[in-house]
Length: 202
Image (spheres, helix red, strand yellow):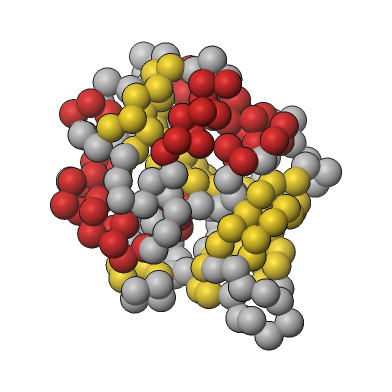
């Protein structure tokens, strides 16, 4: 099994690659859609600003690949946010694979960005969350958040309630950084690898 790590301007590549290496998973870091076709699943990482990230995805043709693939895809942080329809960050349209527009946290009684450890409020059962519960904490760094929708598996709360884990068919996303979330993050990535393995040959 091989996991593709999507390489683009806003990717958080090294820490994701290291996390997969610790789990004993084979991986390929690439910005070429043709090479992603030879992977069993794809991790779509991201840090930084949405507008230049989307520009880079379009220039590389990866926006269309993400819209067409039926391989398991896990978006991380900005990678998850870009799955939605639009964002006020640069006021840009994003991939539109999940319904909803991102919002920015309001710095009334909270510090922005939301940075640090937080737990999840699970809404639905899903194999991505196997073995995880509200006693597990994950590491977040973000100023924008996705609304809670029918595709939300688990929510986070930081002033506002927001989507922390989402899934729609082959697409999954997490607002936090599992590669920086110790044991709980390793469990989630291991669950994704199990999903990727179960989809091999399909």
